[in-house]
Each structure stands twice: as structure tokens, then as C-alpha cells.
Image 1: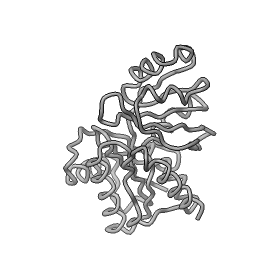
Image 2: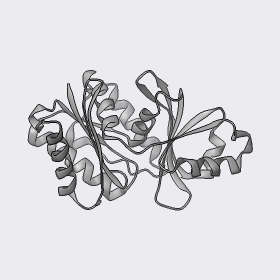
Image 3: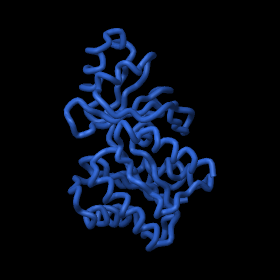
Length: 235
């Protein structure tokens, strides 16, 4: 199955195309967060690059965030629009899960971390890697990077953009973690979104387009979002 993946949660528009476990394209474009037309043009450019059209796509994966509120809204809107207009199944993928997927060959336990747009504040989640399976452990974290230090109890890998600065902030709070934290610099990837969506789609776990909800993560909503999508995945 050929699957298109998009993510607009950050300062790039990420567009990827995969066919099973083979990456056909993985591109990033500077983002204008208020431009729906731009991400549509980006998708069209990547499809043309690999000589495909939307008709060749078997499914769509959409990054749900967290990240830029306006950017996520644009990406989810485009995902819904493509799903309806081309009659394609669609799957929502948390952006943090896609970051953890990028680190799947580096560590069994990964903390994916995204800048929350406020100084020293991040969104994060812990994932267990089992082959190509990326399994969230616990709730989402939304708060000061130094508070994340209290949650880390064993050697892990931190994945994200500007991740070394986050490692230093965590170590400044808990020096015992100095030798336990590795880092992987990573941006949200359209191909990672597409790969995770492929797994969901082959299991018959598509989302209803109208039910796709951007992950506008706040501390009070993190647990509710996890419960919502966990329940949906069991259907």
C-alpha cells in the first residue's frame, strides 16, 4: 500500500510517501503556518517528484501535533480534505510518536520532545520501541523541561529538534542522568507519519475524517487525549 504522510506541527511542512516499508519520498519545506495552499502545493510537488498522483495513494497519515496550533489545524484540515475529495482512508498520528519512530534503531526507550513555544516549556512522551512498533508508555507531558527530569529514572534516548539543549537542562536538575541520556536530533518526518499510518491501516484501524482532532496539548488535556485515541484503536 502506498501511503502519504504529512505533518505541519513545526517550522517545516513535512511530506513523505512510503510503499510498505520502502520510503519513496521524504521532504521538508519551510512553513507558513497560515497557508493551506502551501501544504497542498508541497504535497503535489512530492507526488510529481516520484511520478505519482493522488489516485495512486492508498491511504493518508496526518500528524496531529502537538506543536504550532495554527500549523496543526492547517495540516489536519488538509488531511480531511484529501480523504474526502479522493475517498481515501485517513489515520491521525501524534507527532511525538513519529519523532520516536525516527529513533527506533537507536534505543528501546525513547522520550520524544517538542518545543511548546514558551521558554523552557516542552511537550513530551515516553515510548517503548519493539521492532517497528512505537508504543506510548504513560500520559503526555506538558510543562517545564526541568520537571521532565523527575520522570526519567533509567537510561533513555531523547529525540527532537534542539535536543542537546534539553538534555543539558535535564542534567542540570539531576546530575545522575549525565551518563544515562543519549540524544538524537530529529524533526517531524512525513515518511515516519506514513510508516506509522501504514501499520494502522493494514490493521484496519482507520479514523473517521470528521473525528480527527488536533492535539492541542495542555497539562489538563494530555490524559484525556491518550484515553480517546487508545479507545478508538481497540475498535
